[in-house]
Length: 476
Image (cartoon, rainbow, N blue to C red; front, top):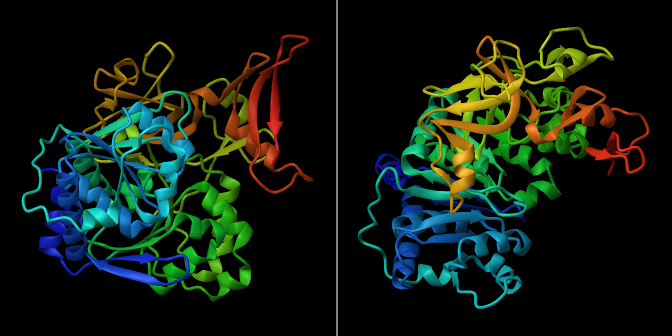
């Protein structure tokens, strides 16, 4: 079985199930799964006719979700490796060059990006591909072949494209389905972009595998008018939402309370929050702000995952009301998670739950020795959802994927089997013999009276005069 079989199976079992694409002007385009498959096979026929060799990594640049989906499935059906990218020349260029300047597939709204790429660029317009002959026999792939490449958004230096195999993505879809309880009666409303793993896997592939209804809002539409997300969720009686921390903060700042008071979000049973560190202060304020709309306090759940593990690693048990852990800041700086009461010497972190089925998480020190409960160290992950490695980077792959374990680059601790992430290993600052986590310092800075709204950034720096370490806080 391969990833393409997810779409084929969904069409066999629920051909009339729909994906609703919400446009920037508020209009909606409804596409059945049968229509999506037909469209994808036309695109696949066009790709086959264009003579692109099987196995070629093909970047996909699409502004509109109704174009991206047939691009993605069409590339799979044609035996190619789709590479979802943000339709932004500065971000697409290093990836395109890393892949050896292959042909790109673009939609009309993203065609201008091609002009930002140097040299001879072969760009295939999705509308032109749709006019090609329908592909009668989709390509056959093996379970351990690469299904798609997932590049981190905003890569710096050499881009790292995660090779997600068919076996890995199918395993993670099964894990997500079991942890979330996704089913055919669910309605998933999302604005998250498909070039992000949580957007592609969490809000398109997982609902498709569950035969759930999907409602897709453009990321820019959400960024310009966050209230649209909630209004669409109300209109379509959403049961599942997903978001990152910044989206919760944006909603708190820009969705007026009188608008929230007119909403009915009582149908939402699950709201998955991940993709970046979760600020407990934002979490609480979002819950308070959405209470008049009837959002179930147990719906919002912090989750953890990363592209190297396809997507999902941990989920909280269903029905819990997520509450921040209150820990002693000094003890945490010494590598121990000690409960305390809220106050000046405390830091709050979110518990992100238990490993999904078949997945294991362990915490190790710098030497690779496993640590005990409530000891802070490097987070390692093992499970059937692990990716194969980084495309074209054997050295980096060997460093991160070792002996069946994935070195996530994150720090955290286990508490009775439950994971709490304290930050990125690269975001740790060492000052006066103590360890500080940048997200914690950023939360303290954000709470400082008089600072403008927005997220401050904390970085370490060496004092050019004394040579000592110092903290630099950058405010918006």
